[in-house]
Structure formats: structure tokens, C-alpha cells
Amino acid sequence: MAPVPGEPFDPCTIPKSAVTASGLDVSTERADFAGITTYPGWKNCTWDGLGMDSWYYVSVMSSINSMAEYLRSPQNDRHVPVMVGSRNAVQMHATYQGDPPDGCAIAIDASGNLLLIVLDTIGSEETMGDPCQAVNKHADELEPFLPK
Image (cartoon, rainbow, N blue to C red; front, side):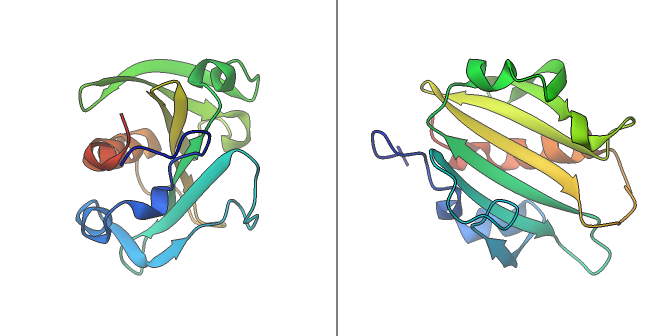
């Protein structure tokens, strides 16, 4: 599943069976980023959690930018090193996610490009669990389907 050179990986190519096995609803799949379908240098795929009481969605984002560039942004703070599968990764919160945060993200390097797995609450839903624990679970389960 290597991306085309100069193009980010398309997260919507992650097998539907893997998305479902991770506890995400494939019927809610959308390839936009906050309603924006074209964001230069990025590809995105988003799914809501399964069930009527799901309080979050997960976006897998891919960029031709480097992880180092992304992590330098002042909007991403509270960096914590984590492992996703056998890969070194960085867990973080964006400033918009509040304190305590109502979302969490994982950044993974993929041969010099950036993969992000972001979990945020749906609309005004209450956070019903630990967002970082939930995004770590999804990252671990989807990692085998992401480019190295």
C-alpha cells in the first residue's frame, strides 16, 4: 500500500473489514476534512464510532509533509512518545481540544511522510471515555494497513 510518489496515501483504501473490526462504522465513511474535500498535500478518511451512542469520530489523515514539520506547529502540544504496533509515534492534543482534552491524535512517520490518526467528539456529544486510550486502540488496529 505504498503511496504514489509525491502523493499522500489515501486512507479510504484501508480495507472496510479492518475499519469495522476496529469498531468504526464504514457506512459513515467520508473523504473530506471538516467539510473540505480538497486540501493540498493531504488525503483524509473519517468514520464515526459504531452504535447509536457513539460519541466520537476517527480521521486518518496522510500528508506529504514530514512529521517533524507538523509537530513544530504551536497548535499541537502535550507530546507523549507512544508505540503504534512496532512504530515509534507521538500522541498529542491540539489546542482546540480543550483542557482536559475532548480529543487526541497520534502522529506516525511513514517513510518521511506524515500519518495522523485523530479522534474528536461528535458535535456537542459528551466525552464518554479517555480519547487517548480510544485513539491508541484504533491506531494499533489500523496500523497494519498503513504505509510504512
